Amino acid sequence: MQNNKRDRKAQELIRTLTQENREKHPGQDVKRPKINGNTNYVAVDPAGERVNKLLARLGICSRREADAYIAAGRLTLNSQPVALGTKVTSSDDLKLDGQPIKFKQQTAVYLALNKPCGIVCTTDLREKNNIVSYLGLSQRIFPIGRLDKDSSGLILLTNDGAIVNEILRERYNHSKEYEVTVDRPYDAHFVEQMQKGVKILGQITKPCHLRRLTPTSFRLTLTQGLNRQIRRMCQALGYNVVRLQRIRIMQITLGNLAVGEYRYLTDKEIAALQADLSHNRTVTSTSQE
Image 1: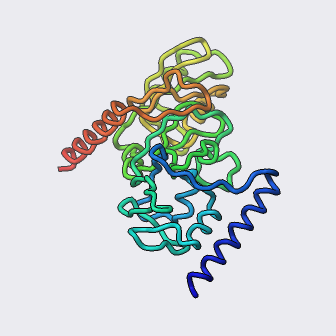
Image 2 (image 1 turned 180 degrees about the horizontal axis):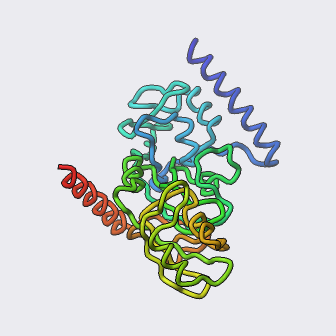
Image 3 (image 1 turned 90 degrees about the vertical axis):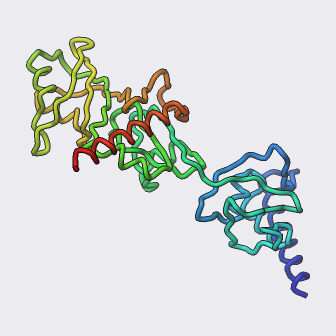
């Protein structure tokens, strides 16, 4: 009796989905799920992910269609029928109509984005121009630090929470390099003051390195990350920043990455990043003994 009720419920849901699909796409019925050896692998949260969401991310079917397959008893998890709301982890054996569905545990992701002006470095989806929605990735990622809305250039993003604080900690003196253009030619006094330190936000900024490019532009290397630091430093000396682009974070460079484009860090870049962080931990630990 329970199986008959379950089958009827499943058929009703499938009929509903088919009708909805026909209204949106005349002449087309709901597609049957496709599973084969070329199914894409997707990262699954170690804490588990709902089966219907996983199937949708794999592109096998929509969430509602997945619920219909669950109701029809076509999905099994570790050889047992799947119930609505069931979560799956990377160690589970998930099958649809007896065919295995491939997925894996979430792995660390490291991205470099050439952020356009106007994009805000926040994960708050209430912000219309938040960086997460701009990228539109399936992975749950967040920016490492910030680059203000009016600036462009290199920003790193990851799902590795352990690495974020280590990169951001000021005591490690991680360098960041910027190309800056101001609204009028600067003089030797400006260069000297920028490098020695400028009073902003109630403190003197750390010494930094400035390299002249043109009478109105320069490259600036900082080991500090105060809010809108470069703009505030220039303003304190009587100049306004008209263009600001970050071109390097530690050993990772912007290179030829076009505005709005992103790339995954190479294995070499990740290894160098982790080596730098490990070295900083060792130096800090030694200095505190």
